[in-house]
Length: 164
Image (cartoon, rainbow, N blue to C red; front, side):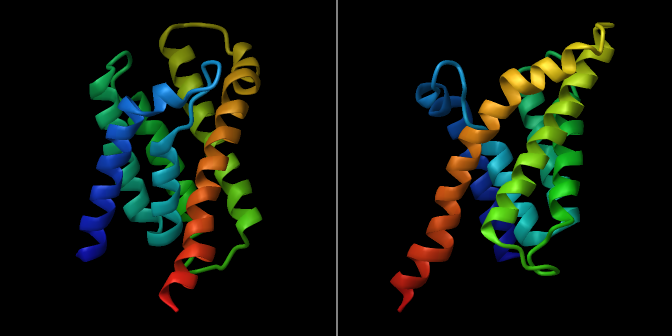
């Protein structure tokens, strides 16, 4: 119960920061996705079901904030939460490099689902998926991976040294 309340707070704070602080720290229009980083951290720590539910509700909150296609973010984040939850730390231990690779794959899955949903809904050709992934997803993924690595450095290097 305590973990659920803590993660609810983390996800709410990341939602607020995503809409207020992140546009300010963007570099040439590339912004990190704190919601995806928070969802990824939750998935790695808690597993498939909490990450799937959290992804759905985070996506729904994002959809309500900007309802271009209602349910598009909810679907993409639910699938991403499920995928990342498969690599739960309680079941398998992974190195930090492997976690970054999983984070990159999670971003690619999220944005592929998001872009394909948008293109199908607007009857656009599916040719532009690869271009969108290369020009927007990869830079955003790199920026978000740097942000996630700061959290991992805190968790695995700084925090244990403070507890001694």
